[in-house]
Image (cartoon, rainbow, N blue to C red; front, side):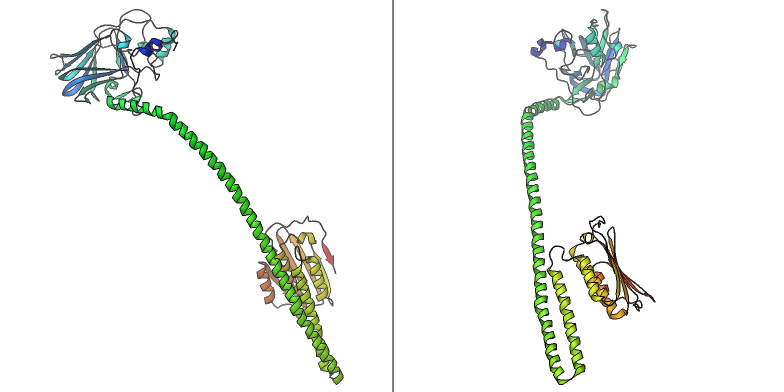
Length: 488
């Protein structure tokens, strides 16, 4: 470092090789307390009452904590007297005082964050620390005074003249008896008052400094060694973490790709399954249509042929009533064959299976040929929004309504209305027949249940109205191309 001018002497390059280690005991745990400082014109005296006689052999003096900087911005001897006398006694008046230690310091290098001295083991209850020699005041540059004022009151800073003062201050005082700090939590008294005081005397024996709890020396050194080891391991840990993060990022990208691939595979599988299912359904429908057309149609045709042969033979025999019955059998077989062909075409149709409006018109024309009939249907493009199954069920329900009308109502007029509103489709079939007398045909109930629709009937002297309300799974748009179909 070349920092010398404008900074404290504690930062001069020569201190890099002075053999002094500026470690501070920063445990970062426990309660924090401020150091105690006394400034006055009379020699200071600090007395510690150990409460009972003990054998003391070592003393630790913790220097005033000036800042959280390492190295400290100022000398570690701030508050440490140049001449220090430590005495022990069994009596409070120190009439039996014994000298434990006397220290003379010649320079700031003789002081540090923690001053430790051993002396012969001495039994005492009271320990007194005095500074008999005043310390000349030092003139500090403004930059030094401003930095020091951030942690020490201005009235305790060195004056700008050379007048001698007695300044004594410590962050903690430890007296050891059999390896234990006997001064921890003990009472400290001050002599030669009045004087300027900063902090409380109890801070000298509370076991804490500006940074927190003061540790036993062995534990502190062990933690410093452990910190040195961890600092050496830190680059390796950071490199390992970086490698793990890179590996995790790579694995995450692979998972994204695999997830996307699986999603595509699942989607393709579902589409393929749907296509296979539709193909299978088409095959089944074609087989049913073929069976109806080939088997049932052939049988009905055979019945018609047999009735024709029987009719010819009966005509030769002159049995007119029986011949009339055979005509009815022939007509019925033809009607059944036509219905079979209709169902066969419906099952065999492609796309949406059938043109619903056209099929309903064709069925009404065929069933209601002798009746007056008015009908109103939405456009075929609108009805194409319904699923194929719903369209077939709706057609078969309508066909069953017409069948019941021509069989049982005796009506002369029929009205059909198919309306659309959002997700609801309503089919209304009314006639001017004899009515249902509150009964609903079982065939209509069954067909409505298969469609999951609501069925309602309204009978009166003027006829019967059958109302079917069907709810679609999605909204049906009425803006589809095509106009509504009305005819009579």
